[in-house]
Amino acid sequence: MAENLIIDGQTKAERYATLLPQAFALIDGEDDLIAAMANTAAAIHHTFGWLWTGFYLVKNDELVLGPFQGPIACTRIRKGKGVCGSAWQQATTLVVPDVDAFPGHIACSSLSRSEIVVPLLDQAGAVRAVLDVDSIELASFDDSDRAALEQICARFSRLFG
Ligand code: SME
Image (cartoon, rainbow, N blue to C red; front, side, top):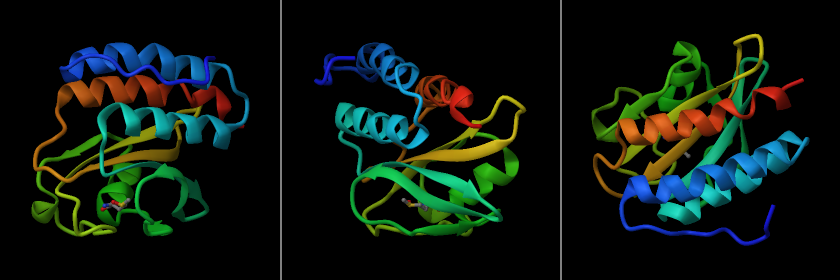
């Protein structure tokens, strides 16, 4: 994998088209989960300039902060709490166009206005982590983000022992 991230395209679709093969190469070329998460968070974050992009890992009965880019964040989230804990509990991607309208949203940053959280499953189908991306604008995320980020997250399944 090259050491430079290539960012190209004006539209979100064009940017994902450039990002996806690079993200796949970063993940497929690394056997250490944390290292792969760290570069993936950086690649997504800098492709789009989001407010916050990062992973939380399932540890016992809570999510614990993992590799991320952006401002410091909450370190622990209970199952079922906030958008992250809800995506874990429901084992499904949650797209939140307005965080103020999401009951129980956890405001790590007052600048966050919209959010997407994608679960990462192991090969047995258990949720082992979530990817959280936050934007300073309302309604930044849609089905194109869901589809692309789910492809990226699915690539991690072999890294969960
Ligand atoms: N807003 C998230 C918490 C994590 S931070 O945004 C990085 C939530 O409600 O789960």
